Image (cartoon, rainbow, N blue to C red; front, side, top):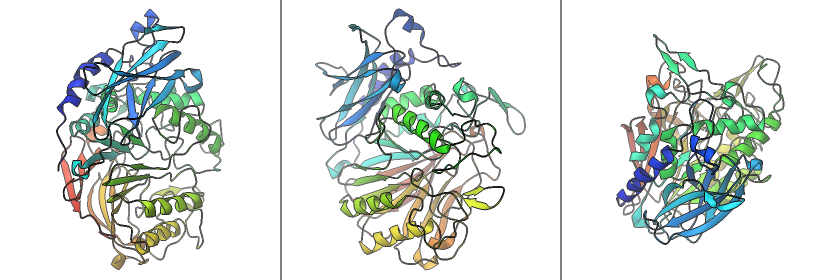
Length: 528
């Protein structure tokens, strides 16, 4: 494609991240860095950029104490004549995290930034700067767009293993130098405590870095914060965050497995003393907004949302969905009327409206759950379902009704260039949905691509529900359940839009970057 090489990005990171490596947290309990004893604030959790547009971007940092966030930007890594912006005062109310919005940036250019933390009582006393970089969205179609996606981090008891080099998949993703990374949910496993060791099948031991907050299921706000902080102990992830801006969404494990609004935890799970999932979700949502740079959910804010549209120039709009906050209860999914569904009525109308307004060549629907893959949520009394599909191959029922309405809308409004990306099921696959194979036929063919996990247990391929006529064109998944990252089956996906032809190519990749499957789609079509 027409992407220009940008060696300067990596050169600045080699220098600046050597400095940030000195800020690395001790791996045992996340204590403050040693040099913090000098009394200067430190940013040992690195920096992140997120929700970047053609002229703006959010920069995130966490301090080890109260501090004023200061961001300097430059067109070059030398930081000659930098532009300085004073950000928020970081305090205990946001767990010492904060974001600063950079405005008025040039389109399609590399932005170098560094974050300084200043003593609130003596602004001359600042900690070591932490440096990052990102590209703003280009308004020129010829520049093309390339991004990656995946999900599911530190799940099923498999955390940061220093013997394997930690979260190694981030190194392979960084080598591709994407414009941004879409994390499709399950950024943490708040319901998945970590132990120091786990036995591996066939012998051997998996060794985890552990922290106090990861020793039990998260219930308090402090425990949720500690879960998000845990992943930032990994040097690979911190380097990646400083190089590649993010687009973050959430799913269930940011709160609790398979949760839905109004759920009450039964005594069959004695790990929880707080039984209201709504209470847990509110705490998790606050911590989520504190630990990621989201344009619609800011640190400390009581209001906000996860769903949003990110305009990535004339070639791409990304529609980030929230399939958790507004869903109805998990059930057998046999309702013949279901206006709430998995998106909620208001979010569905919002999505239809935004899709119809979009003038981008490609419209990626970033879903935190798949459409036609059956994801059970069994209970002691009945076979409930967690996602959209419920295993009945007939006409749409339950949550399928809402998806049918959306697919019909896309067809009749002749909305071109839609495709679905997701993670969740801990394997990688490509599904093609075709009316001629379906019980419901009032839609145009489309693709759904699945990739993940990043660092979690891998599982066998999910069963397909033929209501919307999916055909699994490719899959790679283990035959056993909960295969550790040491056993492979860790995946991410790549989307590459050519700036000249407008063609969109999807590549499903393994942990080391090896391409497993490739599919190229043509622009300007309602169905594909």
